[in-house]
Length: 490
Image (tube, rainbow, N blue to C red; front, side):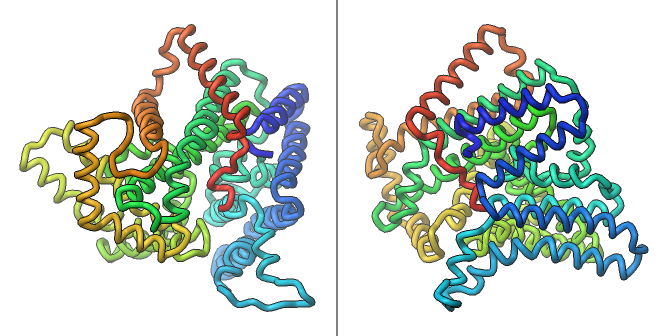
C-alpha cells in the first residue's frame, strides 16, 4: 500500500471516519494500532514480528529501567536494552553487507540472500524512535509509559512507520489520549499539506527522475557536463521525493488528530552545511544532535576545537551509515563531517572577509546558498552511485578541464541559440526538469512566508487546491503515483 497512491487515501479516509465515530481515547488507540499493524503487514509481511519484538523490548525495558537504582548497574542495564533493540537492525540491515561476498549454504538455502530479502521496511526509523524513547527514560526526561498500546502505537503509527519522520516520545505520546474532537480547520490544513506533498512526490519527483537515473546507471555513457547535470537533478529529485513523503505523513497524521514533527524546512536555501542539516531530514539530524553529538560535545568540552571536530565527525558518520552498510554511505557521512568541521573553523573568518570587502548581504547570501547546494550535490554522488568506482569516475569527470570546456561550449551555444535544448547534453528532457527545479525553489521561498497561503483570497486557495488535485490525478492515471519512495529502503 503506497502512501502516495489512491488505495492509501481510501484507507486513510475510512480510518478517519471510524476514529471520530469512536468516543473514548482507548478505543481510538486500538483502532489506529490495528490499522498500523495491518498497514505494516501489507508492506513487510511477516517482518511485523520484528516490530513487535522491538516494541516489547522498548516497553518492558523502559519500565525496568526505573526499577534499577541509579548507578553503574542502571547504566549497564540501559546499554543491554539498547543493544537488544539495535540487534534486529544490525542483523537484517548490516550483517549481510559486512560479511561481503562470503557465500555459504545450509541445506541448499543461501543464508545471505535470505537475510537480504527480509529487511523490514522502515526498520531504521522505528529502531531510532525506540532508542530515543529509552534514552529519554534513562535520562529521566520522561517517565516510562505504563500502557503498552501507547508505546506500540508510537512505534507503529502507519503514516510514519515506513519512512519517518522519526518519532520523539516526549512530543508524540502525550497526544495519544486521542480525545480531540473533529476539527474542520484542522482537516483543511491537513488536506492542504497532503496535496502539496503529493504534487512534490507524484508529479514533480517522478517527472524529474529520468536524468539522474540515466547518468548514475551508466556514468561512462555520458559527458562530464551530463554527469554534473545528473548530480544536480538528483538533489532536486531526492528533495521532492522525500520532502513530499514527509508532508503526506504529516498531513495524514493531522487528519487523525496527531501532530508529528516537521522533517524539512526549505533546506536548499541554506547558506551553510550545518544550516542545511538543521533543515534537511530534521527528525534524523536532530535525533543525532540530541543523543549523540550533544553528549560527545559535553564529554569532550575540555578540548573545545578538537572535541567539536571529533563530535561532528562521529555524528555525521553515524548519519551516513544509518542509511546502510555501504562504502558510499560511510564516505557520504564522513564528507559531511568534514564540511561541518570546516564550516565551524572558518565561518567567523569568512564573515569578517565579506564585511571587510563591504559586499552587501543580498549578494553574499545567495552566493553561499549556491556553494552549499553544490557541495551537497557533490556529496550525494557518493549517496546515489552504485559503487565507489562509479562515484570516483563521476568526480574525476566533473573536476576536470573537459568539464570546464563543455560548460563554456554549452553556455555559448545556449546564448546563440536558446532553443530549449542544452548544447552538448545528451540528457533528454533536462530543460523541462529545470522548470520543476524553479518551481521547487520558488515554492520554498514562498514557504518561508508562513502566512502566504492563508493570506490568499478564498477563490485562489480553491483554484490552487483544484490544480494540485488535477496534477495528482494525472500522475495516478499515468502510473507515476505507484512509484516507491527513495527512503523505503532505509
